Image 1 (cartoon, rainbow, N blue to C red):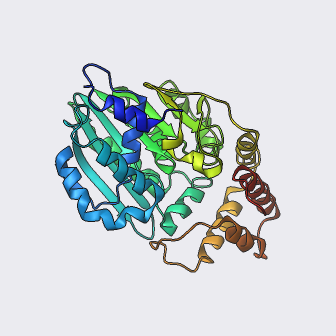
Image 2: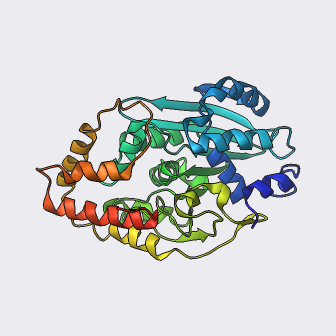
Length: 343
């Protein structure tokens, strides 16, 4: 099965004038934004390539950072991407949020790309917060970033992101101001979470739907979380959480090779939608924030996510709303099955 790797190999020397900018190109930039580099104002592609060399010691910050470096190397000296200008690369990790975004401009196309979660504690905390808070600190930054970085000259705008970055693309597109929204051609949420029920049933979400493209692998874990619709389900050559990585997704030319969602992914989707809709948000917020306080790590530090440890933490909490506990039990059970883990 061919993937984005073969796409890059065969399309990197075909100009955008010959083959239009497409969804696989957008996926590529949703990966490149994972480069673990410092913020900057503007660089050409060649300057970005040289600049990134100063950060190769951070290559293993996440699996996606590794892939970002790999793709940067693969498209070096390419005809298709050589004219790319990268602007306003912002990379922030503090005790309140983990946020990264940048603006790519190439041959009349503008792409706003949001980074997903890295290995920071706060990054994973914010993943949970989208279930009971809106907008989160990171989502507010994403909204402002989109509105602030679109210029009068921008006509064809794509907003993209993978994992949490996909959720940020979804939210920023939905909340784009009246000057920016008409310029957006498509919003690509690549295996990123959906929304709370309140936002999912809002007029803003319905207005965005014609522009929203949700792409997830058949065994999705992250992309099935919370409310969303109109999925493109793609085949993956990996299994379990490995399906989350875009280099495993089936690609034929400019198109994804489609499939259907697995039973475990459908069950996980149900557990985070049907199971959460009638919960008291304040009780859920209190439960999660208590769990986070019991994580004895600096929020900006790196860590390896251990679902079993998180499960033990909430099970040992004495003052937790019974309905929230039942929801967590159901969600964790579904997640373990989707990931083929033993409880």
